[in-house]
Length: 184
Image 1 (spheres, helix red, strand yellow):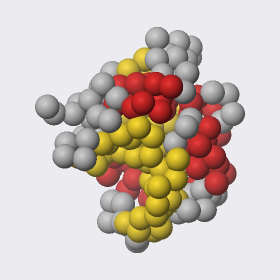
Image 2 (cartoon, rainbow, N blue to C red; image 1 turned 60 degrees about the vertical axis):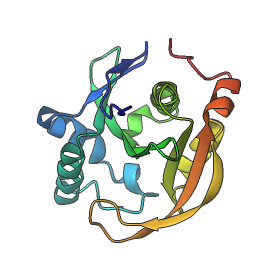
Image 3 (cartoon, rainbow, N blue to C red; image 1 turned 120 degrees about the vertical axis):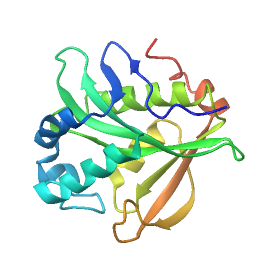
Image 4 (tube, rainbow, N blue to C red; image 1 turned 180 degrees about the vertical axis):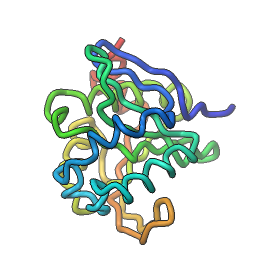
């Protein structure tokens, strides 16, 4: 079986679809706020050159998804699937960011719920790599039922290596959480 890294997914709140070059400027508008990156290992991603590197890497991954507010049609962030492993039967979700105006309004949960629901039609485990200082992201992962299973130091997109907390949720845990298929 092959894993489709760029599915079209949607709910009443959000739409996820493949990231395209045309999304660059709208996405930069969301990324240009330094607060978006204050807890992230790459704190300068609000700067044009750093953002462009991130965006170009996202495009070349052939796995990035743009996050669109379903009610307004506005680009509000990006995310992606990566590190699919058919032997260990897992895929990772990450590289996610949302514009600051979309924090605390259920958008992250809606994104992850769609992605988990989709991933669990193909794999038994979802992994999240979260920068060790990114308390906002790992608390959000814990609210979704993911549990910390370790640490991992890795380099993303040729950037300097960073230590990440590794979280995981399995299919049975997700289905038992009550959040599974909540976007249907």
